[in-house]
Length: 329
Picture 1: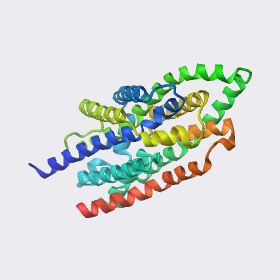
Picture 2: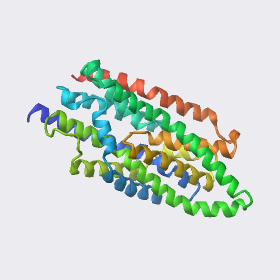
Picture 3: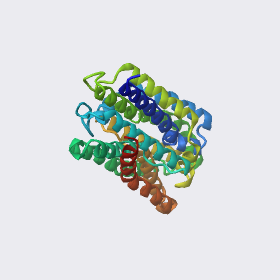
Picture 4: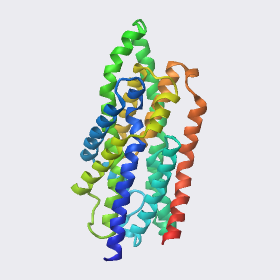
């Protein structure tokens, strides 16, 4: 078998493996609040998230094109397949480490940082599209800030509207509405996160001269969507516990506000073709909602550890992907 074809097959398998891991790593983003408030039973929530992730994944490709072409020009890399191999291995390793310790880190940060590091080491700094990389990083940085602010505002508005209603009545109504917002959030997760593996596979196809454009083939859409859905169906219970119970005590009205906020930020980014961290969006939304409920109710020490994980992800995976490239190639 031709060496380039073999590496191409390895890249596709690794990309789908990343998508699968991303599915169970980020399941918590979509369903943690609805599970913690008992709006949905865990297994029901996970199966619903899997279906909605799949539907979201096959309907959009703008983020995939950004991932596939903004960090580097795949047609300009002679060793693009090797670069992608190192990228995916680094991102997968980091995702598994953070999943094991129940840390809701960003799969998006892991993939983007790993790609930048592998391109820098494997192809040289002149092959790295610094402006495109900067634009993606800006989206990843500003999205959680926006989610925090919107979550705070949405919760304050809901508190004002339902101030004179009994908490039992309010929570009973919002527990039902959480089913809808959890489904919407799962859908938006698919529209953004599954696109990243699609972009990497399309990057590989262009690098290997199997196509000369960044349009995502149908088989890539279906395979990435399926891998994401299957991963989601397994569920990431450790991160679900962190997201749903350890940041602050979430009630149905809080869960509704957080889910609505997270979904809005993620889908807005999808429409702008920007890859954002669904982990960042929903976690920041939960923090914003919790702050509006009662600032002291939020466990800021845990929030601080989560933020540290966010900050260190990109430099760590950049170094890791560079080392992997050196060792393997």
